[in-house]
Length: 173
Image (cartoon, rainbow, N blue to C red; front, side, top):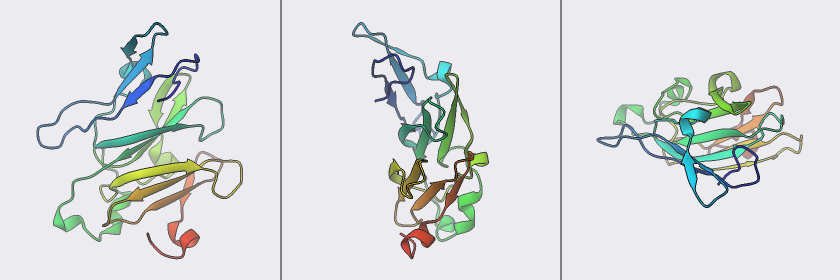
């Protein structure tokens, strides 16, 4: 639930798995018409993503007053992918997590510039967004499944994030 267009009415963003076996589809955004009905407008907003989507969180990562979005994805792993940390930085369009910036109502993927891991190693189970270091900028904690570390992204306040789970927690989670 999110008020995507800031009109005072809650809208609904639905994540849908695409590309695994025979599953097909895209994430959907149902915008509230304020009359008890909704209209699907994911494409209009640039949020009609087709990937292994698990969940989305809307927040003001750049503090500019319009909601941005972090998209948590899952992955399907082959035995060759386990314990290969270098894969977390190799972008994968289906499985890598993504950060979307809201540019006047149209979202664009800024994951690479923001230094968000986008590889096939992540297997997102949950996330939390809050200002962990009290610097005024929202940080992102991503809980991954057993074969990959969790990610703790500190918002640098300049459009970039620094991942530092080991430095913050003392070891990999």
